[in-house]
Image (cartoon, rainbow over all chains, first blue to last red; front, side, top):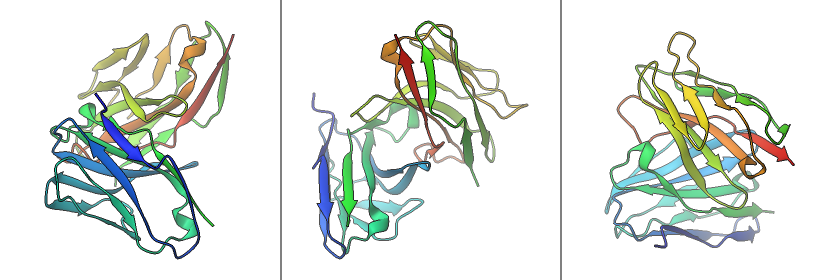
Length: 113
Length: 113
């Protein structure tokens, strides 16, 4: 099983550039979410989705867009990257949204210069 | 709001030493408490959980007891191994939004042979 797959693993952007972080899961999970991990800050929830066509904001949504057109995919878009968005990004999914059943991807390390 | 305060790292131990990583929390209602582990280059994995006061979560020799009176969920292991080297995160979920996890900052544990 592939589980939760994130691409790319590493990315370097210039300020103002746009890009999409990809997240796909093959477990037919309804719930998917994006977190960012910053040194000394732990993980913070950016956006989440409880099913196809449904998304909502987490703790730190500014500067990020999401959509959920299929159950499998939950891309995270940075429309105009800023240095403050330098971070490690994790996608997670679960069948029901229960925290104890969350599966995390291996992360995308993003640097914005 | 919810918050999790975790022992600052890094923590360096010799193999077979006793491990304690302190975690205290602030939350409304009756949160569920979790410990996640992140091995180098990987995403987070659930290590153990407790859903009500006085519950003890355990897995792979690690234990943590949900102490409502002290709002704590300290992680312990009697004899650590080199393979336990990782970052450990304490987290909670509450308020009916079980998938909205609040994480601590993480504690890096290094175990030397």
